[in-house]
Length: 324
Image (tube, rainbow, N blue to C red; front, side, top):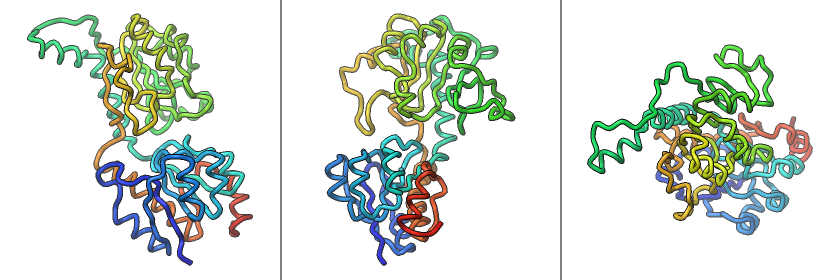
């Protein structure tokens, strides 16, 4: 049997399409076909006969999933998987995988870079220098020692004061963290950094009422997902001085679409943007491209993906394809 594997985005970035993917899939008896499928209709037209699919952020809605007559695996080229309706995939016995260990060092480093840039007002000093100003003071710049970093989400990146409602206190053991409720984290933190996955329950989890709990000297750092924050509310909080500033690697837009040029948050002088680059390094990107192809090969060879995000699908999967 020759398996058909479709990768639903081509040429996204330099190095996005590699011979290694073809080689790994071919070694498992498959053939990799690259097709640009960005909409429900194009996914349905293209992927109906695929045995496995490699996707970046394409919309695998219930309608799309129900059209996948032969699909065993949807392998996401990212840490998230909110582009796939898991209930539909689970019901049909379609396995879904992600790359959760991709870019951990890169994102944590980038979050700290944004934090330090905010704390030291590097953007403002850079602007002042370009305007001919020198040896100026832009208060308040506070010493970092003694300040509190609150991280929302205790995952691979979480290191400090953490709010994660689905984790028991013992999960923090050995991680040098204190588990607190979200409201306490917001009130006590000088920097709040987002490191949690995006789910329906977490969509716009930070709103104006939450920013009002924060210190007026506090900063928000977001290297996770823009949709975790109510962006108009964040704009209000930044514009009115409810919080001091923000370091944003992400905004409320769907990748790879950039923010609108007239987005008002882009006009604020107390925000540092980094164009959704936190995840990137040459090493991390090579790993990101390689891992989904390896997950596909694992499934085509009769196994299960190492990073299976819907284990509940295994019963329907084995009933449909055998094994178990």
